Length: 283
Ligand SMILES: NC(=O)c1ccc[n+]([C@@H]2O[C@H](COP(=O)([O-])OP(=O)(O)OC[C@H]3O[C@@H](n4cnc5c(N)ncnc54)[C@H](O)[C@@H]3O)[C@@H](O)[C@H]2O)c1
Figure 1: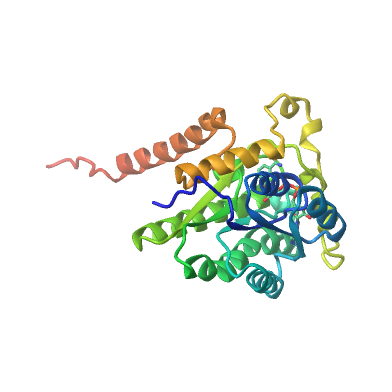
Figure 2: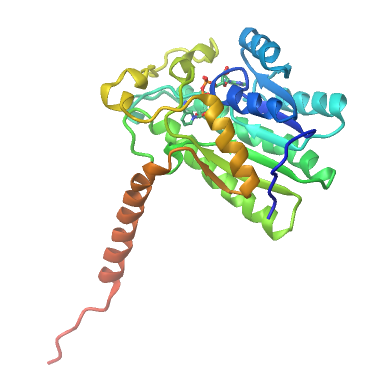
């Protein structure tokens, strides 16, 4: 099992690092002595955040494989190696499945899922190459454990996929006794700019059904426990120190996960009962 308790001197890359959770992770990494590159599609906030926290900025569109490869090349050119990758960039626009256009599906899958795949593809060989302790963390969500959240169906589709990809990767790495660990980050409610996700939607992805609701303005959701991004940074670094595969920010939300598991278990029980041989009457 790979665990990293001290990130001092390590080279780290955080996608979506200009804002929110990515910024919080990057900030804590810098404070603990890591050399940090933040990558983001939004040039203005990217430069401002890099200057504010003392990170290197590399403008990157995670939905574009070539852009992520260019990021990897630039990190290696500058630092020689990389130890930590946080595939964190993501968007959370809302729609019912029935209303979604194929363009909507393409955009959210391109950013949330292909963005993570591009990061894994470009960086995993680099994380393995040097043989020193390394970690790859993919940001999913509580929506990666529980899909049925109103308006967030497409989002949950991508976050379930990230959960599956990361669990599979963690298993592969453990079986090969790799120097690299893999974890999925599943945040609950965190104060960020995610409620303005549509700001980064490309112009060609018009005619959309997506809307954007700020769930922090919803009375019921506003009453939940909201974390600041830097607190998530602390939780993530503590998770790496423990060698976790699942890093959760809201442990008190476990009943939602258990409820889904209970529903699945009940379906298995009904299937088992239905497949039992029925007694046939003998004449
Ligand atoms: N805030 C929450 O409550 C919450 C909960 C669960 C999961 N998450 C996840 O956390 C991650 C970070 O979100 P956040 O809440 O900090 O939101 P945020 O909007 O504050 O930050 C997301 C960052 O990703 C960047 N980004 C968007 N598209 C990109 C692209 N194509 N290429 C590169 N960068 C891109 C944005 O410019 C932004 O800086 C997301 O994956 C999100 O799904 C957030």
